[in-house]
Length: 240
Image (tube, rainbow, N blue to C red; front, side, top):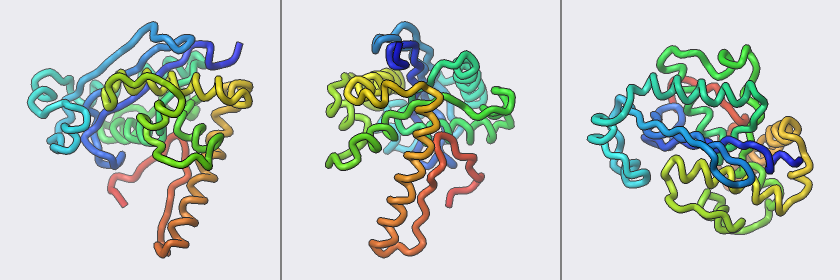
């Protein structure tokens, strides 16, 4: 049976910002999906330990007051999410995340910030895999399609329901649904095993980054650098 008919794990974080070096986890969700339908879920609310900026609150709706009153300590949330994801990877179950390089890199930064074992440490030194990123796959299989590539736009393109954008559970479920929908539309994606698909995404993301960097430099930004590492960047402590 093709991978998209088997168990998939949708994963998403909502955060204090858009720079994975600086941003902190506010909410997280891990959704078990089989055949496009949710069969189990875990959700977390963190007290990030820093103020949640107003623009971030406007996106995900979690106020500073609620995070402080109801959220678990940030280190406990990061540790718990990492343990859950590692348990699925150890069992060979794919983790699906839209724009995985953001969520996994941010989680990695949180683990490092709190001196917790890395994802690789939890996997006996192996890299987190397999990861399925509908953002990276869609950008490769339909590279000339015009328009936005955010989660809402791509869900619309593939007819996937997204009931509450920027809610971690809704986004995680939509990411898994997108993975299935893309595989249904593109049989060559469905035909790849999860390990091979993971390897291909590493190549596709690197190619996209190189192309985008060249585009920016042609447009006049001579020093533009686009990181082509996927799905996890070991970030430095300071933004660049």
